[in-house]
Image 1 (tube, rainbow, N blue to C red):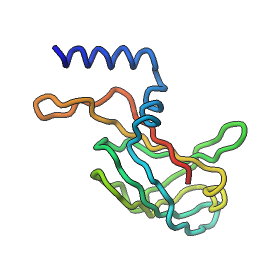
Image 2: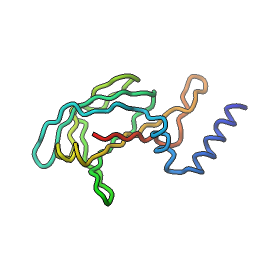
Image 3: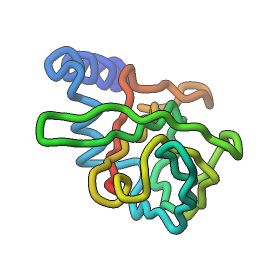
Image 4: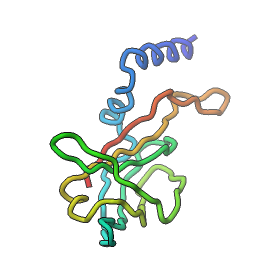
Length: 142
């Protein structure tokens, strides 16, 4: 019965908050923090190759990462390539890179932000995780 109440509560909350639920969760209860770019290699055509580190706080499934070039009027997504491939990561401190992003080193430092998207478990049934129906969005500012 408790599980039914939990599921119903999450469904009502999700319907009421809609698309913003993942952003709210990521702000209040982020999946990652202490993200820092530790090395930038300048490439041609306005690109940079980056390496860095972060701390993964929760055991959630990675869904994607988007870098944005920001401006007073909004922003636009920058192309990103995981040159080292993707990895399954446990909780704790991790390193990343090389990643190639369509931003100059100056744009990365002064006019960018990134959003990491994960899907996190709500609870487990019979040893299997039941995931939230939204993506948790954690932001960082390189």
